[in-house]
Length: 163
Ligand SMILES: Cc1cc2nc3c(=O)[nH]c(=O)nc-3n(C[C@H](O)[C@H](O)[C@H](O)COP(=O)(O)O)c2cc1C
Image (cartoon, rainbow, N blue to C red):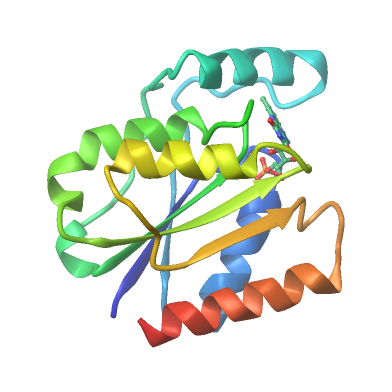
């Protein structure tokens, strides 16, 4: 089954994870970015990103190429912001709702230790799905290298390859 990984990463942890997945599967990476970048350092990063996530904002995205017909499985990869998935992913889902119908969904969630379960529930709700075909939850995989993360990554890739 052909897979797309739609991802947003502010500080590189989610990107680290999805690049590893792309090496071990035939998944294609589709990075998305807001037109107006969020501050990515210090207090401002948590303030503006957190507020945007809590408010359920849908920031305008830079152009991206996504031909839904090519894919059977769509993986959404996102950091956790304020126990939620990130606003750029919200925009992507909203903008592509029609063409996402009938696809299998999976999720990759990066966080620092709290709120991943809530973010997954919110992502499922927003997608209108009861379950993901595969789920991967990692604690800061780039910033906190850990063999447990690497084996979770390998298990997730195996699942994707078996879909
Ligand atoms: C605005 C903002 C809010 C965050 N909220 C949470 C949170 O609620 N729980 C958590 O465990 N980590 C939280 N984090 C940390 C990130 O989820 C975590 O460091 C993630 O691995 C970063 O991914 P990235 O490097 O791909 O951006 C937050 C980070 C930011 C910038």
